[in-house]
Length: 215
Image (tube, rainbow, N blue to C red; front, side, top):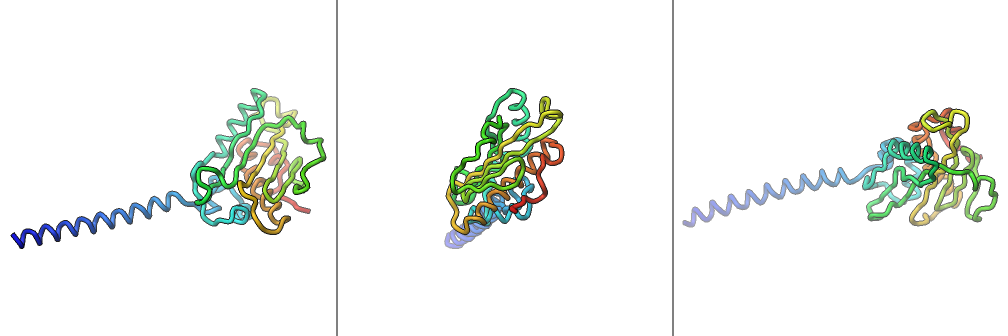
């Protein structure tokens, strides 16, 4: 009986060891599936500069693809909104970090815009205007970008362009050089806008250059 007990003990220990190895293996795979680099965000459409900017304004080099609002889905929603005359904000590529929980560390929204606010020159002192798209403003925590899109996917847009408004918001105001943070925010928003205008088929990339100009 002693030999039988020892045999049973050895078998039990072996099974526990195998279970432990399997558990470690599974955990590693799950960990890989739940993390991403900045360059993998937004379906890999972010530019190299934008990926670096994401790391800078989020303070993280590891990200969680918690809610992958696809560029193509946002484009389809905007096309429907324009046809219905609606100005709903549509989420595009929200960015999550391991510490942001269920709320995006960086939220990016686009909408069809009426253009009513374009003529207004006043804005908060923390914002600075840049010659990007139709109009662009950025602060250390936020960025706003207007672009005009001529596309056959929009109703009547072949003759009259559709004005799109993009907005980026950091859940926490990052620390650092004010001007560098402004440019980083606008660089990320500009890159997402390029991906979106490509999906929408906007003529001449909706007037956006490959990289935003800060002159």
